[in-house]
Length: 229
Image 1: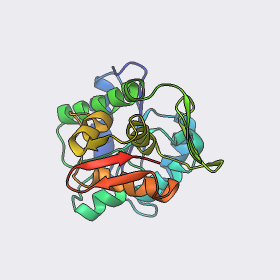
Image 2 (image 1 turned 90 degrees about the vertical axis):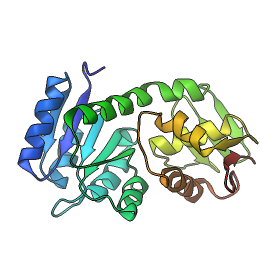
Image 3 (image 1 turned 120 degrees about the vertical axis):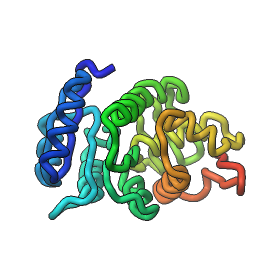
C-alpha cells in the first residue's frame, strides 16, 4: 500500500515532525516535512504528495488557511488532506472539514493507529470512485456531472467541488429519488475504518448546496439525504 505513496507532514513542532516522518518512512512511505504554512504550500507544489497531514495550530498561517489555499490550486483539488491536531472542539472539526479537509485526527495518536487511518484514507481514495460512479457525463437540468474528469458544472460554470464533495454528490446522483441513510453515506464515502464526526456529512452537504444550489439535494429529516431535480 505504501509503495511510492508520498506524504507531506506539516507541523511547527520539530519533534512531532521527526517522530511522524520516522514512523511513516519505516512503513514505506516517501515523506517530506514542512514547519509552517508558507513552507507547506511551497513544498506541496514541489513534492506533489498523495496525502498531506496538516497541523491546525501554527503561527502565521494556520492549517485551515493552508488547506483553503491548497484547495484553490487545481492540482490539489483532490489531494487527501488530514488534519492532525490537539484541538478537539466541535467547531474546530467543522471548520477543518469546511475548509476542504478529508479527515480530522486528534493528537496524541499512536503510530500504528495513524498508519491505519492513513492507509484507510489512501484505500478509499483509490476505490471509492470505481465503486460509486460510472465514468460518464450526466446532465441533470443545468447541473452536469463529469465522472471521468471529476468535474461538476452548474449552468456551464465549474462548481469547484472538493474531492469528498464530488464523491458525495456522485453517490447521491447515482440513484435519483433514493434516500441514502447517513450510515450508508459514511460507509461508502469515508469507509468503515475512517472515524469522522457526526457533523461531517452535514458540513459537506452545506458546502454542496452553496456551490450547486438548493434544488438538488433534499434532507429527509431523521433519515438521510436524496438527490432529485
